[in-house]
Image (cartoon, rainbow, N blue to C red):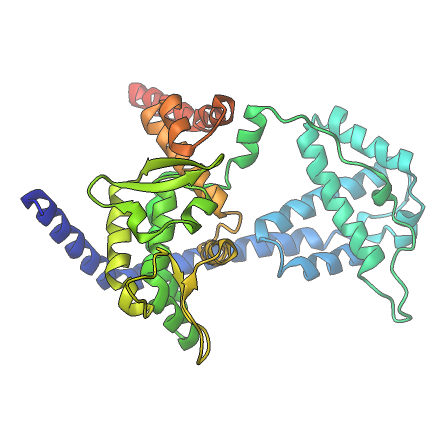
Length: 392
């Protein structure tokens, strides 16, 4: 090992110890901030709910375990617009809160189409926004017809007009796809924040649950290596699953993978991914009780008294990413979104579509072009920062 690499390893070890010493207090502050934000959202949801009919409030309460506070608040806004339209059209004389279930059951398809036209032409909502608001109504009406029951075990609604109305058909161009992906990937400091969360902080926030803590401690290095490798290379899920130990070249920072079409390719990965993969490899054999002939890089811990170690499956990797993403506060994150996160960062820093296309293994350059749209937001922010600097 060169002197430079020795110094780098020492620095990384120093930073690791430093992080461990301060991460608990730091994460307590993050948790406090997250709880305060959640409380603000819930207070606003409570405020909006007071003006909605009782059956809508019941539905929102049922969805609190499934939807984020931000999504619930959006639902409240959507329902307020819908019920205000009902009042404005003279379909009910009274307050928004008093609109009866029977009125919803009597709504015609044409009336719902009129409401959607109101959204698009009067409120100037895009077709995507109209679809989102219609989806919120479809979800509410589905609950009222198929889930909620009266004391006589009858559905709240016997007729569901929203089931008869179709969403707008939208042909998505690259920019639309990029906009839809926005907010569902990691940006800026979130790359390292998420890696640190997987490596250390997930165990801290579950410190009172020994089972979770022990499981995290056992698989911490493996899980960090998986996250770091995807964020540092853009590998597909199937490519990560198929990796063997011999496929990793630590000197060249490459992983040998089989791409679509059964094409072999050596894919580069980042310095941080190298450090995390090396740390995992050093503990892999003993931690998972492997013999020398076991080739799979990422392995699952044996389960039960006669459990055997096996290659980690695609679904297992999906589930572990979902677990960390949920706890991190970005539940929309997935393995594929981590791949998108890498690609977005690569394009922003290098602006080289041909190389990115090769790195990702895309057969068509058009598929790669989406990342030119994803980086427009950062470019806009950079220009605005320049404007502010000139003003000063």
